[in-house]
Length: 109
Length: 114
Image (cartoon, each protein chain N blue to C red):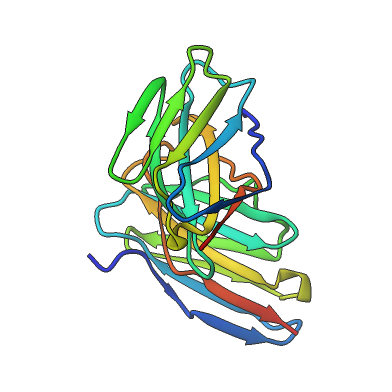
């Protein structure tokens, strides 16, 4: 299984862009990169998934360099409600996805 | 759709008692997952079903834990006997097909074993 490493915590202010980077040096050829968000007292919620280059949806963007050994989740203009834990997962249909410790994002006014 | 439904939402029990957690996945989803979350260990995958069949239960901590999925719309996670270290939030999630597809999580069951 590809192991992921991400910062334990990050602070930001409202209106700023937040970039959370995840390292996955031993990612396999058929692995996808998926990000989930978890608010307190709730289950994780899917944010975005990608394989290579850039993926964008209404919530976030995901940047994946050519070597795919890392990925960056970008949240544009965060608000207080974006305060949550963000998990980076790497895997494919043939193995289990493992939630690591996640990155605890605190958005301040 | 109501999403993934879990019951009970909260459970307080005494050590040694049997605990049964219930989950109703999203209709049409073929895969179901049970997770446990604690401050110390984070979010751990316990077991994963595909088409009602357990695919991998390597995350189940020990024989006191068992999970069943008798049909496509219902699953249980049972702990017998329960111990204080089992105290955690237990999440159920479902996806259309397998670990690769988006997993939709339920609200969780907060278990406290005294």
